[in-house]
Amino acid sequence: MKRRLVVVRPEPGNARTVAAARAEGWSVDPMPLFAIEPIAWQVPDPARFDALMLTSANALRHAGAALTQLGVLPAVVVGDATAAAARAAGLTVALVGDEDAAALVERARASGFGRLLHLAGRDRIDQQGVTAITVYASNALPVPADAAARLDGAVVLLHSGRAAQAVASLALDPGRVAVAALSPAVLAKAGPGWRATAIPARPTDTGLLAAAATLAD
Image (tube, rainbow, N blue to C red; front, side, top):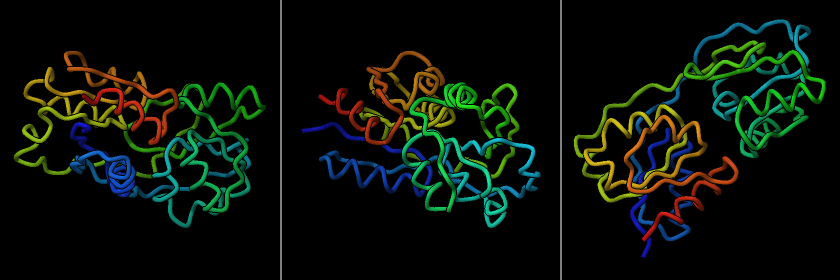
């Protein structure tokens, strides 16, 4: 029997991950620690850029109608989910990266997209030479009173650095908690001392669940 899985990512991603995990036989505890909210922003002149950079589908969900003004730009994105959301929004996806933002920037520039406009979240690592505009924020939700008990003995999915830091602050005994992190950078934010850790070969939800499966007793 698989171990308990705790999913702390914000909605609507939380519900999708929970459904996928339950389909694989996990006993899942949804515990979102953040909520995504839009941030007002001004659309720059698209002629200043070669491509639109997207590292999360949240940017597409929360950019609003102003996004249509940037539809003339090809999109370079991280991950298949973001690519699908970009296409659904009417954008032309020119490049899909399967690592992180830094790797995407490197690939984009090698493909001739030197001037990138990144529609991003408030909490991010800015990339050198990339123009970033904040279009959404991930705000902390009230922590459930029983959060530490729910983490105890479970496998926790970490989709972001903020989630990793939040879980680290809640776990009373990290040695009793296993974590599957979306990337090495996310795992680094969680710090040491966990019972076991795993990182997927590709930073996707499917890959993260596969990584979590390696931690189950």
